[in-house]
Length: 233
Image (cartoon, rainbow, N blue to C red; front, side, top):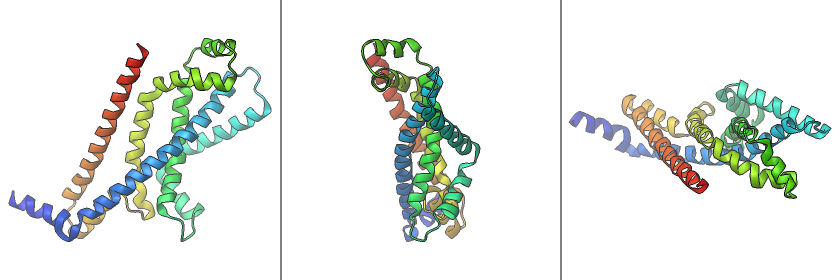
């Protein structure tokens, strides 16, 4: 017991080393939150374009071009590792010395998440019966009003569990930010390990923090799902 307490003090208390984890946690939460916002907006836009193209019997030239661009985006982002994407962003695209690493991470993870959100939402839209769209149009709604008021709310309920899983994956994927020299939660634990030469406690500490955040997100999503089920009755 005394040995554990000594090790705990050396890894987290001495020289305020726990601040590496605190600072890293702050960056991890910030990256996840803002990347999530970008991913949701981008994903829904791509999903609407792709599903609209698939549902139209004779799509126009504009929607065909947009659909082709979206397909290239999805193929590239989903077909390459996230760690490669963030390294390209940091060392090829945003090479300026004044570009914040936090901004690079947010943009990269936002674009990456948008590709997966797009396919999740698209599957939800395509699962809605065609009669729903026809019913909305028969009530005098245009395409946008029907999508926003009838189709999207139903699709969102259908894909909520898959979206929640994508958000959890996004939170854990931010642990690769250390590849571009940015301080995140995993990097904070790695710095402590490099100072104390004791890998067990720093790594366990990082793992426990991630586990607590994931369990918290899962509980919130479960509560939201129950409320949505209640509202359907």
